[in-house]
Amino acid sequence: QVQLVESGGGLVQPGGALRLSCAASGSILVFDAMGWNRQTPGKQRELVASIDRNGRAWYADFVKGRFTIARDTNNNTVNLQMTSLNVEDTAVYYCKGARTRRAGGDSWGQGTQVTVAS
Image (cartoon, rainbow, N blue to C red; front, side):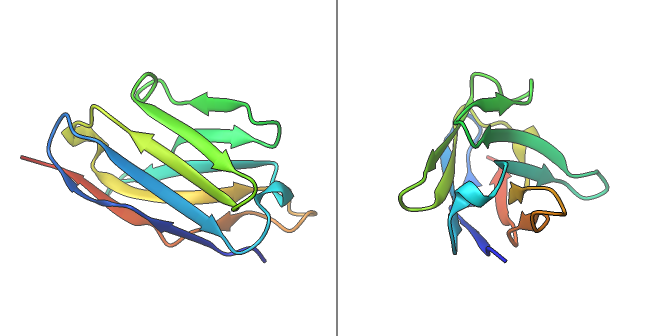
C-alpha cells in the first residue's frame, strides 16, 4: 500500500497563501487520480481539487482561481498551492490517492491543519 504524508499546513492570515505537499512512498501513477480533500468539525469531507493520471485537473467551485494542484511524477509528490485564503478555508486537508478496490483501494494521508485567521 502506498503511504501518503502531507506537510505544509499552518496558520495564515486572510488573503495569504500556503503550499501543501503530499509525498507518496511509491509511484503516484498507481492511482487513477490524486486529490486534496478537506474537513471541518461537524461537516463531511469534501473534495477540493484533483488531478488524474493524464494530468487533468479539477477544482471545486469554491477554490477555482485561488488553488492550484500540481504533481511531480518523478518525485511522487502532489502539491496544492493555495492563495487568497479566507477563514472558510480553515480545515484539515487530506491527500488522497484514488483507485478501484480491485486495484488496491484508496489511500489517505493523516491530514494537515490549515487555519486562516487574523
